[in-house]
Image (cartoon, rainbow, N blue to C red; front, side):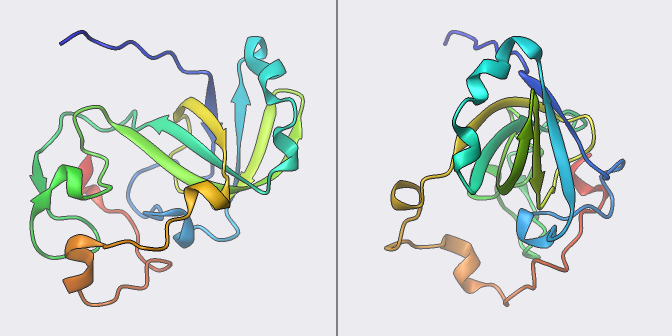
Amino acid sequence: MESITLEPIGIIHSPHTCIEGMPVQPTGAIGIEAYVVLEEKYAEGLKDLEGFSHIILIYQFHKVEGYVLQLIPFMDTKSHGVFATRAPKRPNKIGISIVPLKRIEGNIVYFEKADMLDGTPVIDIKPFYPKYDNQMDVKIGWLAETKPVDISQLRSDDRFK
């Protein structure tokens, strides 16, 4: 299989300076603001993005080392395959977050619900289209069998360093 090379297009600046204690999903990061400083050469690509209420940030879990194929995710006490979770300790360490877009100033994109570490490299930014991105007829796998968890209160620990 051929390898893939991705170059960061910018860096996220957030108040989260260590993995422990961070929100594990954007729903747990209400009111936490951050911003992406896009490399100047990509700033032109932000044209018309400000008309969207939400964006999809695709980024790299840059502080995670190695990967595991089975793990205990934050929302359960049982082991699951990494591809059945959103855990960061994955072969390609790619994360996604759908976040509210606050404003754009030049090459800086401000957003809320920041659940990523300061210094996180951004791979891509996409607009969120509710008509196409929301799915209504879904199954949620092992999550359907777990006790309900208040994800807004769930915080990261050191298990995925």
